[in-house]
Image (cartoon, rainbow, N blue to C red):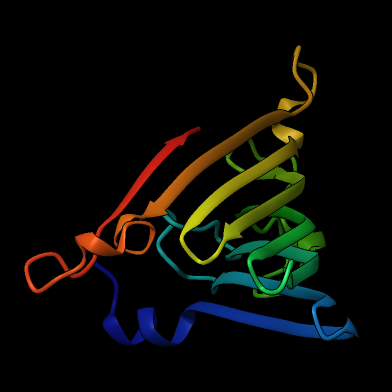
Length: 219
């Protein structure tokens, strides 16, 4: 065991993190029944994790001159989306149309670069250049990844006299995780038909049955 005061004062664990976040949103009304909107977000983080062990630390953890660990992490996340929203009635308000058309993009970039080891000669100079690169116990590592996903989508609902509704949705994604495979994207649609029977057949509506709706859907 080492002296507890040595551990707290001469074996230092220091972390520093800088983070930046930004969001922007814009909406434009083309007509009372249609508008276009867009939003974007960025989240960027840089983090430095360090361990500094002074000379005279037990050689189980450091060389005679000391030990230094430098781990730099960086993460960038970006999200962007554009939407077209429609809400309109036709045929003397008997037919309604509600629709949303859009596209979005998600991007993540992560990197992790680290080096750790004992010092070769100069004591307590905590720099990368002072680490003994020839020592087999010195660890040098670098890793990371990038992920990108793009998508287009639509959601459309047609209503008749606020009693019968037809819903159709569709989405197609292009993820970077499909790279170097036999697939580049995947598509998934849905369709649904619903009706409010207490409105279609007013005679059904009463104290016993105040509201009845049925829906059939496929995806």
